[in-house]
Image (cartoon, one colour):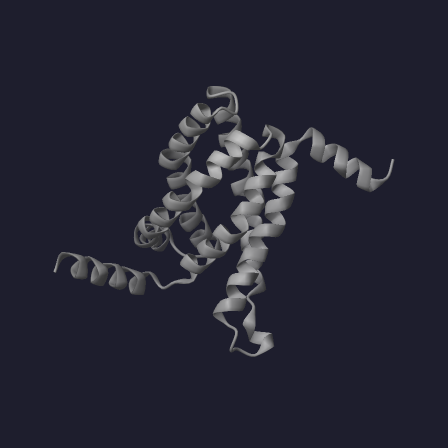
Length: 195
């Protein structure tokens, strides 16, 4: 048996491994894409932060994939089936439980991986959670419905990982934003809405 066939057999037997493998590629790729758009005018040697890409790979494969796998497993046990009703329930519960948890832990955990203090990590969560959640709550329910209603359970993590490529580019963009500048823009929007 070749190494390739052993890997395929392991991926088939353990869907978490497939998710971890895909997230170990997709998350650093998203960081790479975000850095490409942000720094297109910089010289080639200064354009990319490879440690940042590595942090995204570590976070995606070792944290996001296992927590997502756990959520999808629990959701499938609690609300079995691929019916529209089951999909709506799973989507609703995901939007109000897993999604906020994932976003808060992303900002908090990535800040710690950047060697920021706990207070700085908490400040980043406070500044960036709500704007990110608003966008996520408008996009992810549709993706979740497709995932829960049309994708076979063994392929759900892989499907979500490919859908998350664009989402993770957005997260990388939001992570890159200066939290003080983001808070100031948010305040300005609020003032305009009420005046």
